[in-house]
Amino acid sequence: MDVNEFRKRGKEMVDFIADYYENVDKAPPMSTVQPGYLYSLMPHEAPEEPESFEDIQRDIETKIMPGMTHWQSRNFFGWYPSNSSFPAMLGDMASSMFNIVGFNWICSPAATELETVVMDWLGKLIGLNSRFMAIKEDGTEGDGGGVIQGTASEAHIVVMIAAREMTIDRLKTNGMDDNNVDLVRHKLVAYFSDQTHSAGQKAANIIGCQVRIIKSDANFRLTKRALQDAICKDKSAGLIPFFVCATFGTTNTAAIDDLSGIADTAESEHLWLHIDAAYAGAALVCPEFRPLAHGIERAHSFNFNPHKWMLTNFDCSALWVADSTHLVGALSIEREYLPKVKDASDFVKDYRNWQLPLGRRFRALKLWFVMRMYGASGIRAHIRKHVKEAKWLEAQLVEDGRFEIMAPVVFGLVVFRVKASIIAGNAHDVNKTNAELVKRINNDGRVFLVGTKLRGVDALRPAIGSSRGTPENTALLLKVIKECTTNVLSENSNQ
Image 1 (cartoon, helix red, strand yellow):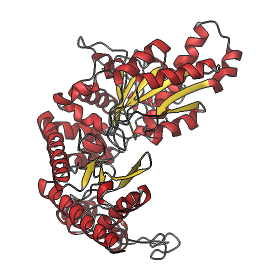
Image 2 (cartoon, helix red, strand yellow):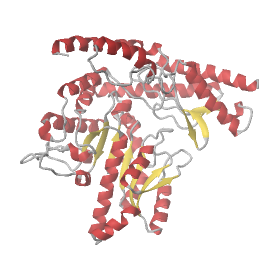
Image 3 (cartoon, one colour):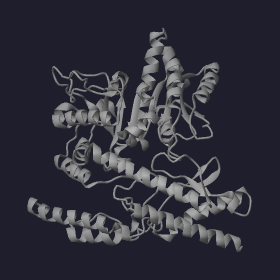
Image 4 (tube, one colour):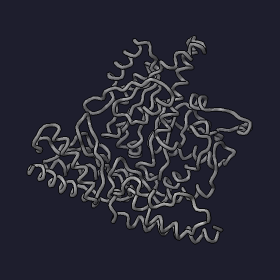
């Protein structure tokens, strides 16, 4: 493909993308293919000779499209949103054009410096404390800063590595020699609630520390008291607490942990405090949500995903640290083929030392496009629209009388179930009916959502957050929920 054909095919692909977005709502949001469907449709070896763009495009439409669950459908309410926007796509196109491997400043100075700038922009936009900024108000380098990770899971791993190094440095400062430090590494304990994302457990498995899962309270929150009790028990057993993750907007219910209380305990016990706000952190662009996040200013690290609810295509996970010393110290490995810039200034950051991989894409471009083309006001309107629709859905479900809300509706997530009093039978029958309702809704094909379990109780959890969604789509969701509920209850009563 030469540049002239690329011009032609590139314009065709833009048209194909635009057509997809104009028509995606006409298709069922959830794919219905069976496992292994694609293997039977594909050759079992790569082609020996080049194939045409037309043939590839035809295969996308006839073979790939049937196997796609349409996350960008306005009628997709599953998991949490995976926002997409045309400005972000344009930024990704520019990133693909440059195709850099930006592991340090000299690889492409603009890539490093734009990331430093936009992460400070974003940090200020969500109201982060100045200690998380890379550049101080006087233009000099701060101790903290932001970096774009691929996912919140990656962010978990790097901050737990930094936390481990911080604790080891403290043990050495208190007189422990290297041999004894190596002997106590296996005694390090990280703390999560039973509602923390599985990324925390995975990160602990990777770095090789112990894990303490703490039961959340009646509102599915990790509390100061529960954390203190767990730490006390572990210290009595000779273990070394070193890390705690508090969540601002859990996956199951969008619950907010006791951030201030956990910060108190982290300070007194010398724990690294990480705030996982992967989903709900985007809401902090709206000042009215910031009182809910009181305590994040005392954290060591904070992470949220613009690729969830802030109009930025996957992958873009924003991580800030208040002090990069332990992060960079833990992940820095020098080689002669990775030269440092002489007389490095405040803007010369080697982001390879802030992440697991060496190479990195120019992800800051799409975030820059989004923040400029929507502006702060457009991003705030995007968030507020979804919160308003979620509140409306909550009110409608309550008014119906057959449903109960299982957790406070604060953001765009509504967790509910059919009331036990409506269903004839025991707790097993209640769970079975609600699980069946999830299947019935998804098999209907008009909308898609997922269910969950809250301490053994089956519930439904539609997440409102499509970048293109409208109140009409939320109304359709309600209509399908009501119709399917009527059908399921009717069938159960006839059995």
